[in-house]
Length: 115
Length: 108
Image 1: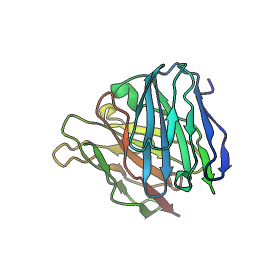
Image 2: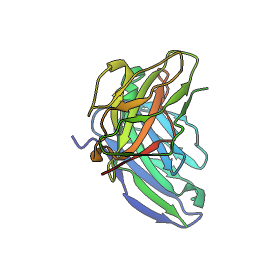
Image 3: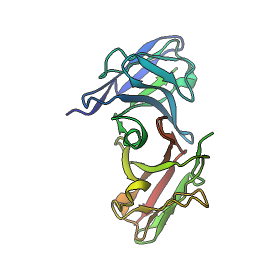
Image 4: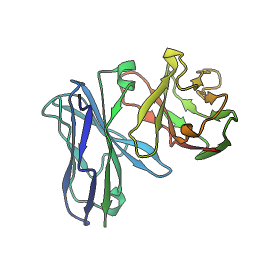
């Protein structure tokens, strides 16, 4: 199993540009989430999905869109990049809710810089 | 609202010294608490969870509901323990809430 994969690893955008961060998992996990990691802020939840066709907002959803058309994929779209979105983005997945949810498997991260 | 507080951004200890990474939480129900670790240039991974009552890499953590704490402890720190540690809380079917993290630096 490849686990949770993310592409690209690094990206530089100009303000106003849009792009999609890709996330895929091959473990048949129902739950998938996107976090951003900023110095001194820890990990903050952007969006999450409890199954194909179902998404919900996390703590910091503004400026991001998600969709979950398949169990395997959970792309994160930046609509109009802003310097405040410079961060490291992590995708995570888990089997299900409750205790199972907590054992999340993380991707390697995407380091995004917006100039 | 759920909240996880890790009061120390950075903790430096000498090799062989005891380590305690503090974590406090606020949640009105019965929480499930976890510690995640991120070593340099690696992805986050689950270190341990309170429900398992296990010791991983010499680390233990006890849930104290009275003090709403879940401190991570190790009696003798090793250089390879240097990493970023995150305490996290789960309240059932909602995604994990993470603390801001503590960077542990073990000095040789």
